[in-house]
Length: 291
Image (spheres, rainbow, N blue to C red):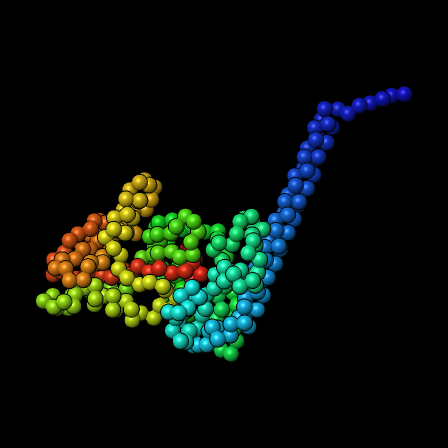
C-alpha cells in the first residue's frame, strides 16, 4: 500500500485556511458581543426614559408649561430659582434614583461604571411633552477644542473650550470663536460716571436670548493666564485661537481695564480705547457637540 503524507505546502495551506477561519470567527463573535452590549445599553436608556415618564406623571406641576421656541430652560437642581414658565426641564439621573424610580446601583453595560453624567431633558412641544435621555459620559473636552453650542431652539454658535473637568462633569466653559459683532465696544459710555464696562457689557450680555446657557460673561484675567500657561506647556497646542482684540473682565469701579491683543498678551488699557467682546459661557454638554 502506498502511503502518502501531506507536503509542506499543503500543511501551510491548511494552516492559512484555519487562520482565516479563526479570524472570521473571532471578528464575528466580537461583533456579536459588541452588538449585544449596544442592545443592552439601549435597553438601559429606554428603561431610564420610562422611569422619567413615571416621575413626570407624579410631578406634573414641575413639568415644562411653555411651548414657545424661545422659552427658557430650568434645571431641577435649581428648581426654586426657575421662572414660572419654561420650555425645558433637565433632570439628573440621581433625581430618579433618589425617588425610587430606578435602581441606585445602576451601571452602564459599556463602562461598568455608574451613569455619572447622564441627563433627562423634558421639552414642551406644542401640547406634547418629549423625553430625551442624553449620556455625556464618554467625552471630556480639551482646552482649545472647537465646539458647536445650541444657544436656544433656533440659534447655534461656535466656541473654544477654556475649561472642562477630567471627572466628566456635565458642564463646559467656552469662549466664542467670533466676537459678538464686528464693532468694537468702548469700556464705558461715560468714564466720569460709575457706569463703566463691567456693568454696561454684562447688562448687554444678559439681554442675549441664549436660553440654554447657564452663565454669560467676559473672560477673567486669571482664566486667560491659566489658558496661556496650559498651552505653553504643550508644544503641539494651537495658540492662535486665544489671540484677538477683546476685553477681559475688570472689577466695577476701576479706572483701568485689560484686553487681549493680537499676540495673546494681556494689556492694561486706561479705558480710552475700544475693543471687541468675546463672551464666555457655561453650558450643559447636552447642548454641545465637537465641531
